[in-house]
Image (cartoon, rainbow, N blue to C red; front, side):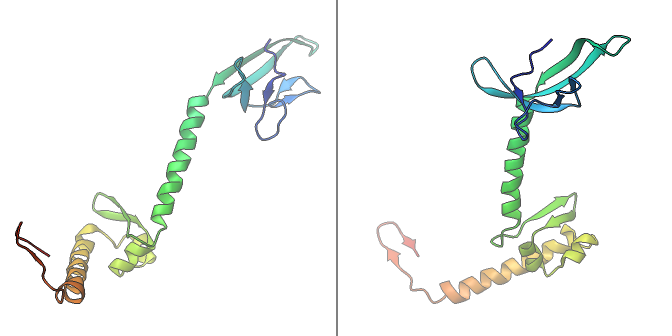
Length: 166
């Protein structure tokens, strides 16, 4: 029988699902288990008693599966999702998610750039065939705005040694 005295639930800081009154593991538990080198690893622990006809526990049958890699992958996925959400919720850049030609998700900045609403998005009225001409027109308008307001009146500087103009 496995010694469960050093198996602790991270949230409850007590033995994992082990009921001291019935001596039974109540259900699947995700536990931190201290290893011999005094580090902790995640384990999925399951156990049940084997009883005799009178209900006395004769022995225990159980498993303990190392799920450390799974927990690390879940944490990496959570952190990655947080970064994606922060980018998606930013108002700096328009972002859309496309499946085939259909736009299935977009941040508010992208919707503002294309003059569409969230209702249009949910009604699936946005696809690249419709949006692309709008984006190209707005890009051309923006390029024209930048040229006329910032570049057209800029003095030209010449470098005689390398023929560069700015």
